[in-house]
Amino acid sequence: MYQVHVVGMGLEGPAGLATEAKRLIEAATLITGSAHHLRHFALHPAQKLVLGSDIEAWMSRLKQFLDHQSIVVLASGDPLFFGIGRLLTEHFPLETLVFYPHVSSVQLAFSRLRIPWQSATIVSIHGRAVDQLEQALKKSASPIAVLTDGIHTPVAIAQLIRDLCLPISYKLWVCSQLGGAEERVEDFSLDDGVPAPFPMPNVVVLQQMETSTPPLPLLGIPDDAFYTFPDQPGLMTKQEVRVLSLSLLRLLPQLVVWDIGAGTGSISIEVGRLVPDAQIFAVEQSMVGTSLIHRNCERFDIKNVQVVSGAAPKALITLPDPDRIVLGGGGTRITEILAICVERLKPGGVLVGHFATIEALHAAQIHLRAQGWSIHLLQINLARSTAIGEATRFVPMNPVTLLQAIKPAG
Image (cartoon, rainbow, N blue to C red; front, side, top):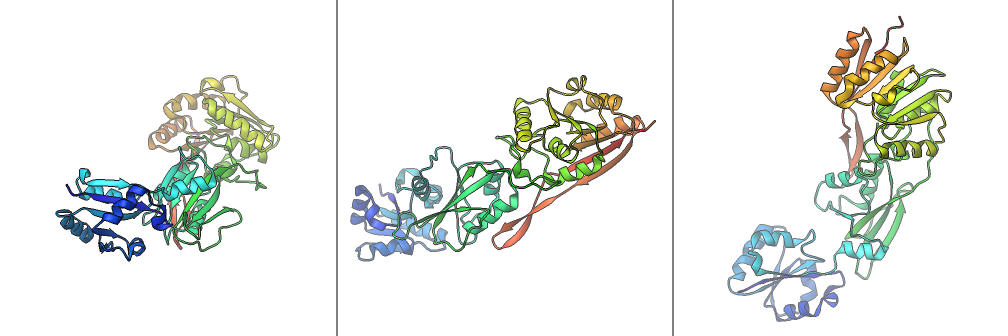
């Protein structure tokens, strides 16, 4: 049976091939691959077939040749790693394919950087959209290796990271022409900027790094300044929503504030900075969440936030009556939580609820209007700009509705 022998090569050319692969090429009667690969074998007597832009026509020719001879296909690195190997497995019976992988560019990149990569996230944006990279970044994956192209360059990747306003920081390496005579490995800080251009091909490696807290604005702490949930780094009240919520709270000195479902404590900390003489109770049922609130209070040197571990409404019973309440959705217990809020909030007090679902929002409206409270709704649909090549597009954030309810002064 004739076979397709798929041989992976590095930038060093035939010198880096294993002995078995060299023997196969020496005995080959037909060698195919890109013009770049074939130039290494210009003096070889075998027939040459250049792999061009018309992949389907190339595959058809290979099938014709395979009827009467074996073929050697030259590829880059590991052919089954974002390479021609996948397409070959879709067009040829698997028993006709034999692979001889070379070290991949990603393997070389991590070995040059001395970074273990058994848990790395590998993303290719070579001729692809950046969606998968965005998802990995939003999940705070680390380390990440990114296969680039002439549009999705290291500079474009750095801009994307800045635009996403991530809760963590990354160090960036650009590993160019790995294995070749002009190999370059360079590291950059995203704050200092990434110069352009870089030799092709190149691989970008991203690794999470600890950063000190930068000088903070009076209002609207950046999301990336907070410690967040390791498995859900995006699970927090975003900066823009937080600022709007704080405006609806109508903050004053010497308030007692309940922050129910405090999560990372971002709103409690903002209130604590704005109203230093307030008493703030950050109520959170998850152990990870309460730990994050403690860590964030230490990070921002907040002394007037007390962390209350437990689920509402039970965790609210022993707290002093509030002047202001922040409610993070409430889940299936929304009416139970609102019942105690209605009873305990001081006359003239303000409740601001954050709702992601129509059902929870509707339940809150019905309950509070039945008590004669005035209701004001603010629907928030925001999008942040991000680079796509040299252009700019908007990435939508999850919509949320803020409910402001004011308890009658009487």
